[in-house]
Image (cartoon, rainbow, N blue to C red; front, side, top):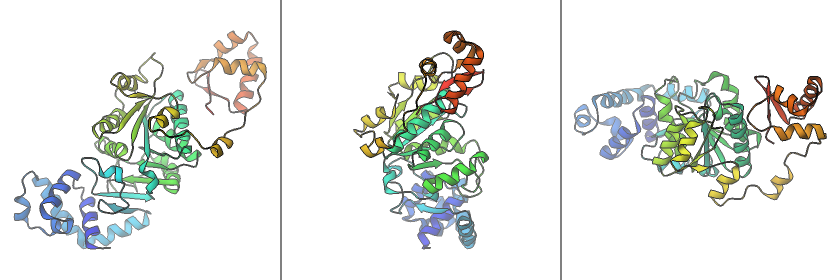
Length: 365
């Protein structure tokens, strides 16, 4: 490891902010010089707080034990990519405050330069989950990298959709990479690291404190050409990501939803403010003049599933908004047992899904 990399790692481990990092390097010329600066020299820099100066002194001392940090990273399967490294994502370099170093599990590739973020509620409706998964799946099949935050709900659906398509996906965490959060996603993060990358600007052992998540959102948008907001209420953190995207000059897209209720009011507000409406992956692809899929990909789509006339009638009633079973029975004018049997067969064919109510939604293919 060269001295420049070790200096970057030390500054990252004590969490010197990107803006302070840049100001220090602009003044001293390099990260190594920053750590070698005296207290008097550090105090001479305008705009650098006492807290930052103390962090720099801590980073300088940390060089003495930096081998411990390197060992922990190796054990966790994590490597660092500093800003000056040719592997550093070029899109992320363009934002106002890029991290001085990215912690990465997995691999960032040149093809990730065309990333699309899909973000939304941590507590989505089934409608949002299915839309996010299908959007991610179709965009991944078209060769785009899907970026999201690794959270519950829409984020997880986006990552899963990309993985199912055999595409690349990047999860940006608001904690250290050895502190999987949410813990239920430990397996998901492992799969993402095999088919893309899990990244963070925060060092190992950094806890998932609330303030870290709005800050990491600028990285989600920074890694992406555009951000798609799906199933987001007015207080959704995904709106912060959309704001970051707009400030970074990236495209903002939003998926419309049912106007009855507050589930998607945040996305609807984005649409009112000029976000581009997305109904299918083609809406995103056409924005960048990309084709939806190659002929080879089209040939590998799911085969048509045979259904009976009665099953077809039920499918015609359903969309992604739950339809109560009582309503289906009433419209079919059949016995409860017969309708229940039809719905069971449709579930077995993976054409419908039962949700709370009981109610049913159509499954996107």
